[in-house]
Image 1: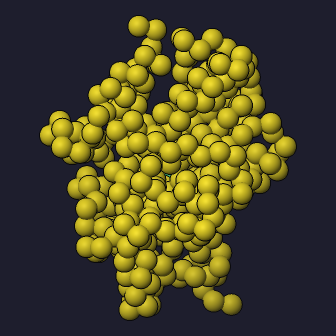
Image 2: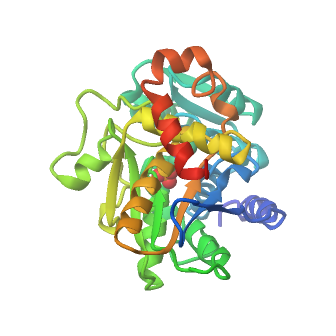
Length: 352
Ligand SMILES: *Cc1c(COP(=O)(O)O)cnc(C)c1O
């Protein structure tokens, strides 16, 4: 037996942290122009590290620990554009492990600050496509372990339950007028969240469909339409952090997705600003992408005289985007025609 004493203690620390935590809220949003249709936001910003990646990081660490891939002296490495690394740094510190995040040089400064705040180190690469190879190299050099969110996200989470995000959503919906949502809408970065929700829906035999909202400049929705397309030669040109990828990640499971909606970045950003105004607090860009797809689905349901619930994810808050989506100069330069989209999304959310 290897160091079972250390392993037991490491798992106990993660479980104890979980045991001290509350579940994330499910926020109900009335849609004044869509009678009989209600929108719900699963608020993943309320995790200790501020995003849905908190769940993923916990699962990846437990998976690696139970596989004995991580020991007391293991340097832990991840390829991450930010949020995953923030959450993983939190768990690495909890276990007293060194953590290095391999990030593209273009990553927003507040995200780098958040990784360092949680005790993580940063390794920058100029070409975003090299983050995987660089992470493997670093792991080999340090004798460390590459967590590899893009490979392991779909299998590290218990899809049948164990309070995964899907089980939590359905439990929190129990006393609503329409407890089984007609649609669940989420994005895909690793693809792990959509894999977990899609499998859970089928396992529980729920009459819910899963829609993945994807940036136009991402490969996922193209692959969904044509499986022969597996990468974008030009890279992913999307400005929506956390979702949309230039290559089809191993954790993306298209077979459990019923539909994909491609969303322009400007529409995501406009919807994000409208939701921020509605809730009175800042949300992140991928939440705007989700909302834009929900608007389309709500309109289609209304046209078909359908009523029911639509559940989507508030993936993270807006604090980490103060120098991008919430910066006037950035918006003017990179935001595109976001203002018109904000007006449309605002009209969807309010009775004005
Ligand atoms: C990772 C991420 C997503 C997508 O979740 P996956 O489970 O990785 O597909 C959406 N929004 C934000 C902000 C993210 O960080």
